[in-house]
Image (cartoon, rainbow, N blue to C red):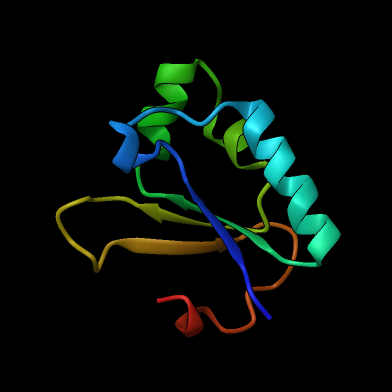
Length: 93
């Protein structure tokens, strides 16, 4: 068992938006290994504006996504399932 997690935009690289081509490569790797691909999308709306893509388009290659509706409160998080059920979200929290 395992999961591949990407953060977009990537905070450790100065908020850089990950290129769609990179996400596709990671998606292929996840599929080859039989692993789900999770998006830490706490700032996905910022990334969507910066890349001129919709949040839906940015999230389409992921099995699950975490959204933060308010960055200053961890109680305002949403864990959304995209394609496959999120069986045990507590494993990743």
